[in-house]
Length: 231
Image (cartoon, rainbow, N blue to C red):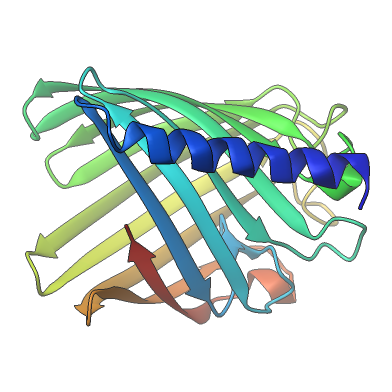
């Protein structure tokens, strides 16, 4: 086991210990989650070569709107890396109850087996208006220290029938300032998804249709089935 893999496991161990402690503190809401999925799609592109993924995370939220968390998944980029580890901090303000909220977050994407070759930061701002969400993610160095500048505006809409099912749709646009970054002649593309989640026996079962406009087999529209559990 190399030093970076050990460091990733240390991150997860610290997160788990902090999560366990936070559960006993008033004014703090702690949650863990685990998901089994037939594919890990990120902005329409498979991160596992269209293979299954096991994912999990810990989230800790305070009454004042601040939250921190970590999330991990297996990945397959046909390189040394086999794991993605995300760390984030966020803030959300309930401006008008649940009808209008604003949010901001910082996300650190790490791929331990690759050293810091692929690691990068993203910043995000968003607005939720009733069932619709609008946001913008951006990075000065996308997918690595020497990566291009990146912007990702998106819009989403969701609707829930309590204790029965929920439906969500999402459209985003990825754009970088580097020609051919996403493929020959492609410095931008659109992704979209439509999903429905049904609670079954205390599990969340989700079927999603996801894909993008990229000319890549791993980014074509496809069906993904996932089963998740929150604690």
